[in-house]
Image 1 (cartoon, each protein chain N blue to C red):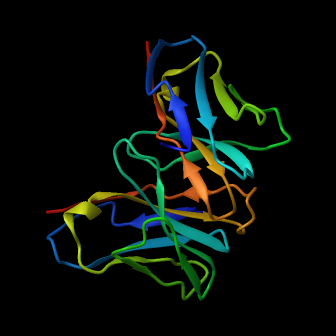
Image 2 (image 1 turned 30 degrees about the vertical axis):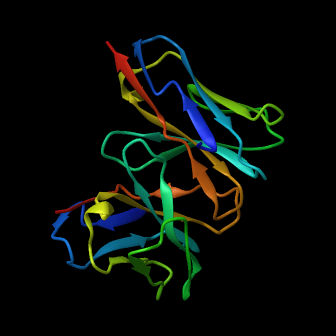
Length: 114
Length: 111
């Protein structure tokens, strides 16, 4: 049981490049989400999914796309990277979208856009 | 202004001592309050989850308290260990999707 797995761990992009951050969970969780963590700020929600085929925007969705074709995977796509997207990205999952469920986080992906 | 404010921003204590971290929130409506531990370079790990009707929740040497009337929570760490060095994040749930994260308290345990 690996929990929530994110790849890559570290990535450097040039402005304008696109890339996909991968996220997979093996706990059969319905709810998955992506956050970014910036210095001096709390984690902020980018996009979330309450099940396969269902996604919605969070607090800071601009510049990011997501899809949820399977229960296990929830990739985050950066369409045209900008320096403002330099951040640490965390994928998270929980059993359902009920508010009392434990949320499990991945180990993070450090992204630098130059 | 953040809806979830944590204090202090950073704290240094000696191994074996106790400490208390504070979380004040203005989030409304309120569903539950969580405390997470985040080691440097790692993802957050859940410590406790409390609903508005719960006053206290323990997880080993970690004890969280909640006063929903004053909108304050605290995380007490007993007999600190070097492995307790981490950031501790307070998270308040408005709804299942709407979590408001505090900025965290950076705790350093010195031998």
